[in-house]
Length: 314
Image 1 (cartoon, rainbow, N blue to C red):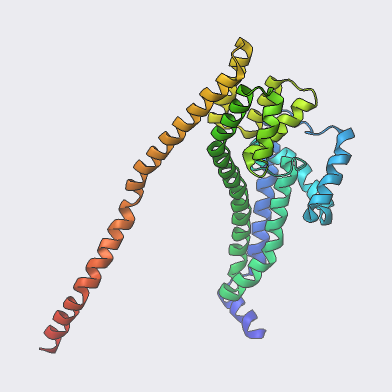
Image 2 (image 1 turned 180 degrees about the horizontal axis):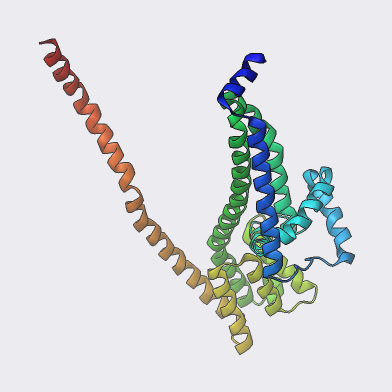
């Protein structure tokens, strides 16, 4: 213990001072962000009305053990996030919907979940970094904790993008099935119900299942389709839903609209595949160059070493 203290005194490095400086800098940054957001825009509004919030929280406690164990901390951080990250909350909310996560998660609470996971991993980072680097590893551990939060946030966005790709791949087949059923004499609700039952385990079936549920509760077709468009928030799906809504307003038969939009989706899918195949050649250029360089080294390396050692021996 005494040699370590002597070494710290001799080098002039105080790990506690570094940790305190980092915490003060973080506190100042968060304070500035909160003040800036407060002055820049209006106060954020609560997503759920109070009379529905009790049921939402109970459902969230049932499906999420993490929320059930840490509800007070999540709610406290959620209140902080409403002021500090209100500009990012709409994007997080759309990604939660597009990723197929439970609708009972609000954006600020899901962000609080990410923050708590990063905080809980901080002691492990501190332990391993200090074992490797000494007291200076505390700063790196704090940085790694922040990177963990950023990666979890990016994971949510990646999950939403992946689910959107799955939906767009299977949507033409669902629209074709609805078209065939309607041409065979079924009503729109009956055809949609059979199509949703056929694709009930797929994300596209889940999304159109929500549309069917809203229709059964009395919502109009246009409102139900607009709700799906707002949930997924994708350019291609927005264009397709817009065309369906326009055809519905103009009185065009739905079967014809669905068949046309299914063909459009297939065309866009083939165009996207062609674009990806064209980009693959450029992306493979660097690995190909590295492989060629490694092959040249493997082939010419022994001859070069023999030449060098023969010259050295002479």
